[in-house]
Amino acid sequence: MMNQSTKGIHTCPICRYDGNDIYSDTGESGDSVAFDCPRCGKYNITGTANTMVQYEKWQKSLPFLSSWTRERNEYYGEVPTVDSYRIKLESNLHRQISEEDSIVRVLKYINHKTKSPGKTVLIVDHYDFPIVNGGDEDAFRYYMKYLVRVGYVTYCDDGELGDAWAYCVRLEIDGRDKLREFKSSAVVKCARTPWDSVNQALDAAHTNLHLGESTSYFQNCAHSCRESLVKLAGEIYDESKHGAFQPDKSSYSNALTKIELVVGELLVGGKKKEERSMAKAAISLANKFAHAEVVGRTQALNCYSSVKAVVEIVNNSFGRKP
Ligand SMILES: [Zn+2]
Image (cartoon, rainbow, N blue to C red; front, top):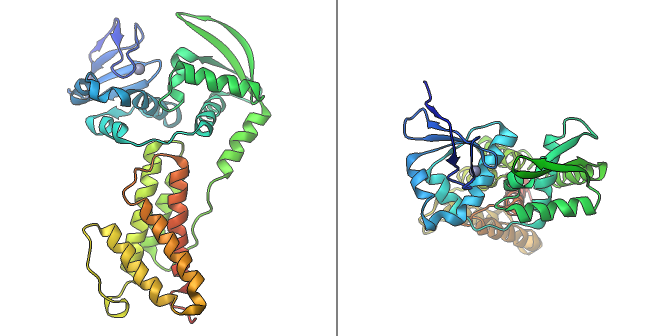
């Protein structure tokens, strides 16, 4: 497929950067257009999405879109496609972005660009700010200053680079330690269960939790967590044994009700009161993530932990003598 490249000044529809180095050509579908932006990276945008981004309604999601495309480029070597679904998703998310998350993002980027320990990395605030999720130049500079102040990063040299100010930084051992500490804060995998369908869904949740700092991975994790409980309910619930109930519209809330009925039967009696309330609390926490948009690492971790607790408590008691 031949692409028609149009050289010249173009404007990135996501971040509005314009320059010679952005090219625009027709994508393989004929409808999409390809861009190579120094901020957003390489991406394709569909005709519909390209129209949407011009409207006021979608403006607030553009910085997050820019972070998303840049991240796909930097860490996954992908050229993502921005379509109407992605714009709506970025716009509808209720975000809880922590300072810790932003600091780790900048550290991770410097580490990613470091060719070998002690080597410096070229940073251009004007181009690199999408590294901070939804950030701007000020936010990026703010976190960079912090990293220098606490000694995670050393400022080495600076100078002009075309129309922007560039500088070199070096990741220090303390900075690497901070990244390692962040990575090791991940939760331990759920214990194996006798149910393959549950194991598979839990594995998918755990994998997504550790793929990287991306909203889409965290959402996939939450989706697989819900799937795990739906599968668990299918494996353990027996209407004749655990009792009938009035089904809800959602298969997820039905699954939680089934699990609750099973837990009531498994952990019956005064001696198991505490186990029963622990299981109920875990089910209630899992329920919290039924309709919530999981966008942050902490939310995804808690979603996995609550589902893990439900599965493990059921597994510990199921099919065993009291
Ligand atoms: Zn851009």
